[in-house]
Structures are given as C-alpha cells and as structure tokens.
Image (cartoon, rainbow, N blue to C red; front, top):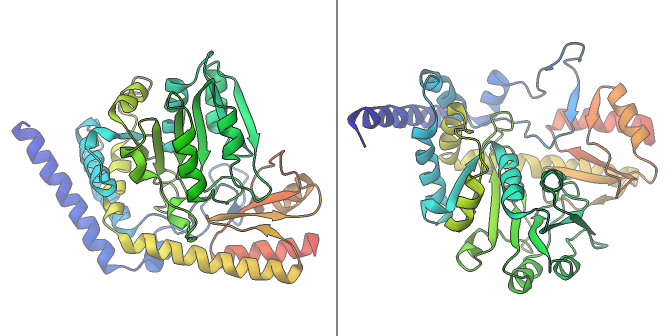
Length: 379
C-alpha cells in the first residue's frame, strides 16, 4: 500500500469513528425525527407528502445515526472512485460472517447480486428454479439470459416446496430460495433447507436470499451463512436495504466460494458501489443497537397490526419479516387502488395469491393510518 492510500484510509477510519461517536450520543428516535421524516418526502411532482408508503418493504426508521453522520462527513470522499475502499467493507463483512475475504462480493444492492448470479449460473441450457410466488427479479434476469424459469408453487403453509424444486433440478443451473420469502413473509424451516442442500445436484448453484434475515424470530429458521464451508454450490445474499435502513443507497453483498465469486464478478459493472454506501455500511456494522431497536420496533408494531386484524377477523400469513400478507377474501386489485386513492400505498398484486395484500410494517402512526383507511374500505 502506498503512503497516499495509507493516509486516505486513516482519514476514512476517522470518519467512521466520528459516526460511531455520534450514534452513541443520539438515540434512534431522536435522529429519525430530526434528520429523516417517518414518511419519506415525495420524489415526483404531483404526489402528496401525506402519502403513507407501505409498498416496498422499506425500513421507516432509516439508517443508524452513525451512518448518517459518516455520510455527512464522507462528502469529502465523493471525488474518489470507490474501489480503494471496497476492500474495507469486504474485510468487515468477511470478519462478521467468519469467512475469508475472497468469499465476499459487494453489489449495488442485493439486486445486483441477483442479476450477476443469473448471468453467471443460468442460460439457454441451464434452467432456473424459483418458488411461486417469490421475489421476481432473479427470474426476469434469468429469462433475459435465455434460461427457462421453472416456477414451483409454495406449500399450503407457504414454505418453499423444496422436494418439488429438487425434483425439477436435474437440468438446473440456478435455484433461488428467498428465506424469509417475499411476498409471503414466511420462512422455510431449517431442517428442510439442510436436507435440500444435501440432496440437490452440486452442479446447480443454490442462491439463498436472506434480505430479511435480521427480522426472523422463530427458532425454526437459521441462516445458511455458516454452511458455505460445507457446500461448494451455495451462495448467500444479504442487503443493507432492510434492517439497516439503506434502501436508497444500494448496498448488498453475497458470500460464496471464491470460484463462484469470480464467475459472478465477470458480469459486474466496475465500481458499482458508491462511496456514500460504503461509509454508511461500515458505520452501520458498528451499531448493533440500531439493529436490535429496529427489530423490536418492527415486532411491536406488527403485533399491534395483527391484534387489530384479529378484531376485524381478517387472517394473514404469520410474518417473519417487516411486512405481512393479509387475506382480504376478495380480489385485491380494487382494494390496492382504493387505498392509493386515499393516500395509502401498499404492495403490488401477486397473481398466485389474488386475494392477498402485502403491507409493509411502517411506524405506529403509519399503521394507525393504514388501519383506519382499511376499516373504512373493508370492515
């Protein structure tokens, strides 16, 4: 490392240290109210600032205080390309996940990770196996890469049907498992996942998307991150968009064997991670309390919503994420439209579950507004 790089990195560390100190001084709720409104400001003209946005599974509490401070101080780095600092974040994530640094690939959100995985492991002669419904992005990327996408319906209790996915995997190059699953907020039990990894052909790469990992509370779930050491065909994706509240910054990563990392990297845009995202991500990793507080707030608000839905006698899929799927017992699209007309945005329509509405768990005031409007339309 040359002296110029050393000086820059020392300055970079000082920025992160200042952010951590700021986080220690200011509680999350103070920062959220003074720096970032609980409902994001509109991004397009003609949109009311009063809109309650519960449509994209965003974290309404925003980034950690230290991340906000680090970003502010980090403006001085904006003239630099991010590759010099990429290694800083990769090393921190390797340490966090107890893997060598060559097992880490950063992405412009986990969305980029999904895209480069589809490019690397699917194709005209390699099928892609996904659940139905699940997060659609990887299926679209695979189709664009010439891959046949095989959709396997979820089980009656909204698990991935791993036995049927395995049965369909003989010609697969890529198998996608979103756990917890989007849009259902359900988990696939750890014993089923382990058995699947043991039995699926090793020529098929299994990408397990753990975007909502931090919200899970059931003991029937486990992260498969430690299993990277056992399974050469396993890739695990994570994101800073959810519990860390950084959806707008676009920062994600995956952990995989080096040979798979290299295959994915060949399809990646150079310098796809920006400096602000790196600074914020590094500061966020230093603030365990922000994660814990976000989990507590999500749990408490979700339980409030569940109790109110119980009173109204609407059922829902048990949630292990920061959103939930509510059974409206009728076609959902008119309700989505009516809620939007009244200033409440909820999730998009999912054809396999035409009577279910996906709702992000926002702040308590946001959910009170949602429930008031919901009662007016449906109770």
